[in-house]
Amino acid sequence: MFLIKYLLLIVLFIQLGGFAAPKKPFFTDGETVIYAKNGSKRVAQEFAKLEQKNPCLRKIMIDMAHFIKKEFKKDMTVVMFYRTQKEQDYIYRNSKRYKRRKFISPHQIWHAADIRSFTFKRNEIDKIVDYVNKKYDSSNHYTKTAMYHKVYNGVMHFHIQFIKSKSVTSTNSCSSMP
Ligand SMILES: [Zn+2]
Image (cartoon, rainbow, N blue to C red; front, side):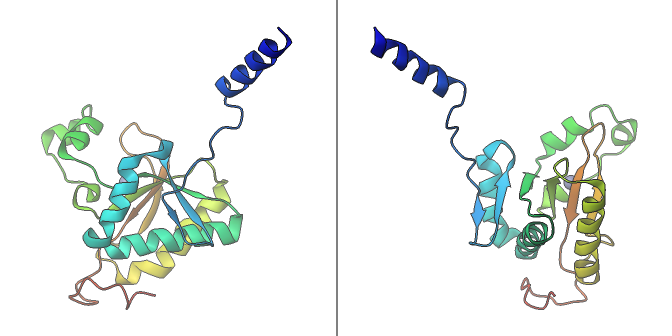
């Protein structure tokens, strides 16, 4: 009886999350780690694909995670890389502007990443956006690399967009980036 009581307690403990399995990052290099929202396998797989699709964006992700760790002792969580046409249509399903004329998101062509922002204070958010833009805008095809915004009816987040400007080099290499 005594033993059963303890067993029940242990079961309850586990049920309630007891020693909850630690979140597993999809990237780590010893210095820092990057997490996916809800441990999403898709985000992890897409990060691996970035190596081919957009290596500079991948590099920026790692750099940003390092900066966040160094400055604020915090971790970075990726919400989204790639977006399908179906997902784009769904996000803008109530937008009159989108209905009039569909537009393509940089996410649909592997040019963008969304990063969770609610774990940061406002001044930290500003510092992160500033850091990324000062470093990468000059080699970016897009005018702005980092933004803090929300998509139609969505939640606030960092939106990072980058594809190397043709004027910088015609190759896919990121070695000339800062
Ligand atoms: Zn975005």
